[in-house]
Image 1 (cartoon, rainbow, N blue to C red):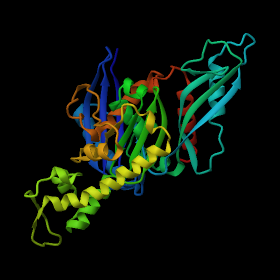
Image 2 (cartoon, rainbow, N blue to C red):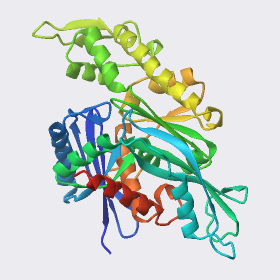
Image 3 (tube, rainbow, N blue to C red):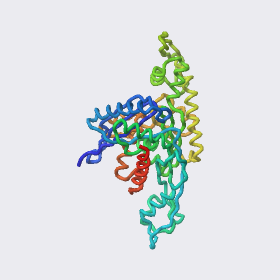
Length: 409
């Protein structure tokens, strides 16, 4: 038996990350390649410059391929941005067989009915995620096939995206020389890398703090119940530092990483740092509290907007295990403490699960989406995506999306 290769590609606003995972014949997953590159062609998760995005994708994947010693043909790609919309829908059908036994075909018809919504021409369904099935008013059924009933109902979570935004991501990857296996909503991918079954069952909110956007996914009773996006992220903090300290954005990012803190009480008054000048001006020495005074208000704004989105879902009281924050923005010191104080619920840092190979290298929140995409690839190939019932429904959705995009190329 040969090993399977899964490649996750996280095309973010500030960085492009690629992770190559090899599944050995005995089932062990080993990280064999990692690559990253600065991202200059995106804004708030949306491609605004094709050529720059292509170069970033090529650089990240070439680095990962060189490390792994393999050539990648296709990738699973993450998508985010404030163009993402989600809603819950229901589909109801009558059981077709005379003996009232529910079949795979009945399930497919119910899901088709649930996604039969009138969408604008510029939007397309990205994910159709079954939450639960109801047979003759008996709810909470994960797999109705084989049961007897007259009426079959399904509740699904639909995720939609702007057609052009998805097209541009596909074009960028294809021009870089790779095929796109599937486009996956980034917080869904991240959830596979950082959440466990108990958290999904008891209730948890996953927050992916990216460079241009903050993505939210809320889980309860093992299923995703709500997704949303806040169009603010770590790049906005960097911009505030650049303006407030009058220093180039590249220097502002380094200052944020090395000296930044989201909570003023965690910084000592006598701590200082050196800020490079602009246009040949001499460097300046400032107090670290000045930097925190710039960062904390913006982080409070971002976390406040995230909390508002969670409140809108009417699910916040069901999040028994609290929230998990991951993504590159989660590495800013004090972020977890500030979120816990503002939200009034337990909050922890989300790190990708341990794998084999170069696992310690990717045990970093910035790799959560890329690692999660490889898990998605593994589960997807076995028909067990998000631990749903293994059937052909996901294949049907994937082929439908592929055909839709192919019509535009």
